[in-house]
Image 1 (cartoon, rainbow, N blue to C red):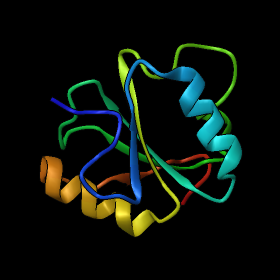
Image 2 (image 1 turned 45 degrees about the vertical axis):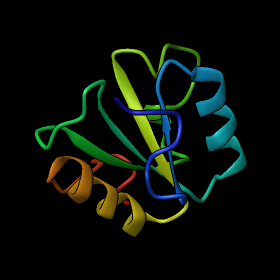
Image 3 (image 1 turned 90 degrees about the horizontal axis):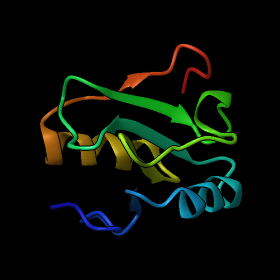
Length: 96
């Protein structure tokens, strides 16, 4: 089972923690976020810039979908390969 912190220290995983997730993206505006299913798998890994309008605002963010966050897109790509054997797709809106 996934915990609040992924295995790589530079990567944070937010599950059922919208307040923590929103604090993280506000504190790391130049960071990156993978949006994925609650049980991550290679079929859906969407990479966003932390400033992307599609992953912020007033709604539920870390329930059905979870957020994997890092200041480095390379750390997120490594996480995705290691944890689910996949590669994140870039968001069509923010294009990280």
